[in-house]
Length: 131
Length: 485
Image (tube, rainbow over all chains, first blue to last red; front, side, top):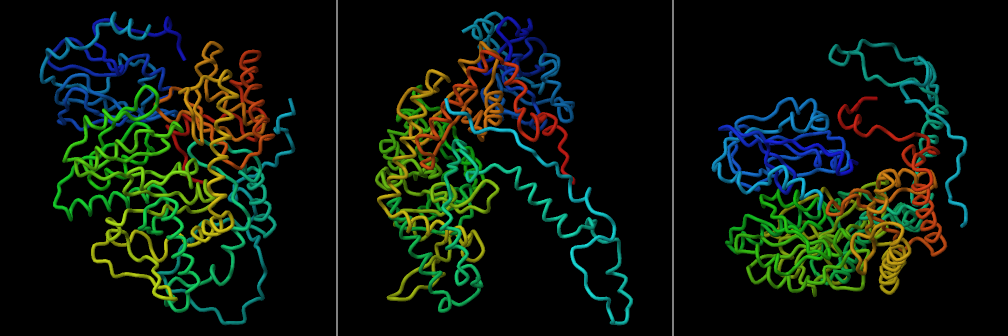
């Protein structure tokens, strides 16, 4: 597993305490998991995705990641409607391990853009992991 | 220290049966037919199944070799936490093989199988005495099946009370199958986080328990091997809102004969006969997960159940409120026989002692290893103790590496990466089976592995090196499973 100084972070994203990220700009937002999350999970072997059109409240479980070690729930950091899911993950769940920031999981139309404010900036997220 | 039990020996390779044999070879010879040949109807013609052509010795060697690769409780310590891999006394097998019991046809009338029915009736009575819950169904075929049946009983009870309930509370230290069992009955599982000490807090339950919640499913001791000390207060809160309390009895081996589930406020509980009551499991055969309920809920239990009228026994089908059948005939009858044999040969006092020794053994391991491995929760444990790889992080050694290295030293690894609430969990359940000398040897072996992690970490990353197969590519197996022979 990676040391803190080996972890990758990406600017221009908002992060949740559950290690999901949300893109910051646009009318629709992409959602994925952080480098810390994919590293902790280990090799991901299955991604369970929601239906396009499904709506979730902030904090709802919208899918699961399955690795050889465990199954982890994915929690939506902000409320919204799913407008797209990353179909590539169906055949190649390892894409998340390869580049967790390029390989988003779902795209949502947020119900309330101001909820983004409650999420962590990249610096605040770095601090969280530093503990 | 004494040498660890692991040694290398000559391991035979063995191909698949399809890769063995030769066209035309067979297991027995029969005389040439003197019956005139007749044409086969077209519908019956075809290529037929692809069976290999093998002699008897091909088949015997094949399965003998496969059996030599086995590791079981009969070959060594099997400290697989949460699974209660205790020794299964051979007298249970002898009893279960009694022809009068084993060969009885399941459709025989009650008058021809009085002995079998008596055993079922008495087993129901024993399990009622052990849990304090008087209504018992022997039908469920395993733990999760017992949970499902229990949830059907919950639903039947709430329906009869005209009370609409849509949710069920499930702590994060409950058994992993609980949410699925509840969801199959239409209840939405509401997770509850355990407190910082690994125990469920009364306030956490009070916050979420309402009149739309069917009840709570609680595993006690929980999957951290800790006793839920607030169980009575939690049960009171759930009952006050009209809910029911499900006790997952999978960890009963810690408290058999020590606590009464009924007095803890539990309304419905399943027992795993294949764990606590020493019947084979883990590839060793089917299980049994009898369901025990309060007197009030008894009428909802599956049919039929064994009852006693005067001096005779019969199966009672006359239960209009029953949730119906959940298993054909008498449940997994062979498993019931073994559990009955275990209870009768142990007696009440020794069942209690088995639990006490199971707890003592786990507590001993916890104390002896707590400086070697990081202890997840430093408080008295029950029948299992949970560590993590926290202390090995500086050596870049993980739980998986240590588990694999234990194989080289002759042990079945403990449960790893479960429970999920502990990062890199290592969950050890020795059961009452192991004597002090064997436990000491296991402890010394774990210490040796941890020392190897410091001195020669590559040895652990390569492990197992002594086993027939080296470390398997679990990722590839999960991503590209090959399910054909």
